[in-house]
Picture 1 (cartoon, rainbow, N blue to C red):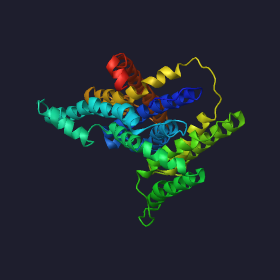
Picture 2: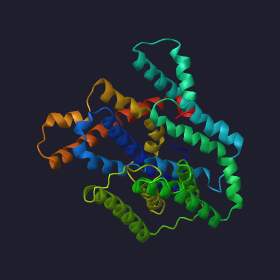
Picture 3: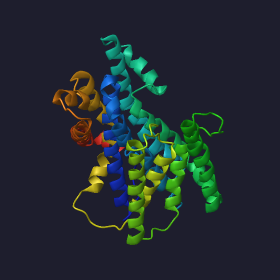
Picture 4: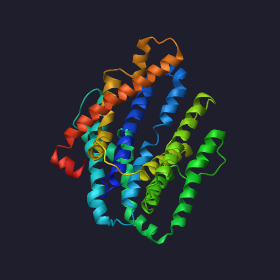
Length: 358
């Protein structure tokens, strides 16, 4: 969801960006449905829903890896004036242009009327970060952009092993320790702030940027196999062992899966594809911004969700219900993705939005 560097590596970033955007949409289709659904319908499908969440939670980490790969690249010079005028301004404008209407819509729904004073109230809410939940990523990336020029100076004097050591400390303190506290149901293991893991993803992108890409099809096969094994292991832990802790952006499984997925794309061979990845990647940011509009329209106004459709199907067995639910989640995801993509395409046709925001 950021502008890329020129050159042959751009394609794998576009592929990852598009796939991560699709995963975000699926995640919000799922979480949005559970938020508005009677909890009595969900328990028998809890294991399946957690497995789906496990397989898409890597989406935001991938965005951060991409940003770190692009902006922390030692070959790229980024001064504060450039960072603020070009990249920070873009994110700030996106927060205002989309965050304020979203915040205002919450006020309208809550009061069932519209008042002119809602506009400054919505602006205040947005400045305080109280708008639609998916906008949190923009506040995070704005902060990372602001510290990037200073961070690049620090990384310039640190040896690679020093960066790796710092990443290891953050991984243990912000990922492993909180996960162990959750699994063991204790609070005795010292932890670093959870937000540290986002800094870790950003640094992981830098680590890939300073390494030379060595196209090795054999290695890529092993990386892809590792992703598959990790994902399968998590699914089996849900279905067979009854593991019930929902994965978060900072938990070790998510960290490893995101890094392996990025590594698989980074180490992959560059080929020409019929799929217009660059064009699709250019729409990703706008799709991210607008897709919750359609999720909310379907769930809160039309009042149709995958669970309500499943209930109407009258499926008799849990196994059949799980299969139908997977198809319904995929169908809802495709509908939302299609509508959001069409909206993004239209918005990018507006010159001022295309140049300064999208």
